[in-house]
Amino acid sequence: MVSAVNDITWRKNAETALQRSLGELEQTNRELNDFTHIVSHDLKAPLMTIESFSSSLLEDYEGRLTNEQIYKVKRRSIVRMPEVRQLLKLIIKSEDGSLTPASNTRHFYEPDHTMFLDMTQENLDRVMQLLTLNKILLKRPVGVKVACPRCESDNVTTVPVCPVCGGRMFVKNVGASADPSKPFKCLDGCNQAFPEVGITYRCNQCTKAFELKESRYKHTFEFALNPQIRLEVESQVDDAEELEQWEQQSQDMEERLENTKAMQEEIRDQLRTLITSQLKKNS
Image (spheres, rainbow, N blue to C red):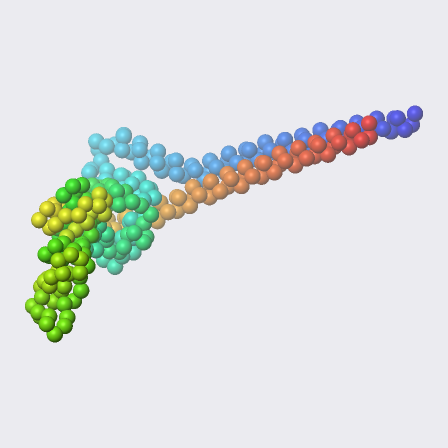
């Protein structure tokens, strides 16, 4: 009789302990959810306030703001774009604060944007146009590029050829009987000597081969940071980088809190299973 009473008492105590433990875990989860919401809100609030203020300012006061004031608000929003900041940081770090075409026939710039920027040529052109329209970059013509007659791309490569047959294999014309006025000899068809190497072009976009007389032309431009707003832009880039770090911290915090919640759930399930199993053994 005493043993039965003790068994019932133990089971009730175990069930009470189980409920208390589960209740404490649920309370911890609720507090964790509240903490997650508060931290996430605190981290994101400055970003939301800035974006909201910029939009409201343009909507409510556009008629009262000067063009320069409107451009300044727009510039701040534009600099928030990651691709824009990539390009601006590259230009700011360059010696003369500009991006200059590397040659007349290749769609590359100095500093070499392909080594520092993670974007396609199409995106680079789009970003440059956006920055130019909003007076962040100033562009000036510095030359002319050969462009493909088919697709009009100026991303072309020069190809040296034999001027007689168009062959691409030739060597220096040497030997006792060689004509010094014709220093090159074709090995790709006509086997003739010639005075100068001919130049043709190959489009890297559509692969069309063409001669200079077939080509179209495009102006090449140098893009330089507007010196009148250089300090403003540098400050906006730094601010945008700091805001991005806040966003990343917010995301990291949410991920860590979600992982903690998952661990709490797992512990609760394991505790319930353990106590239930123990109750069955003693029943």
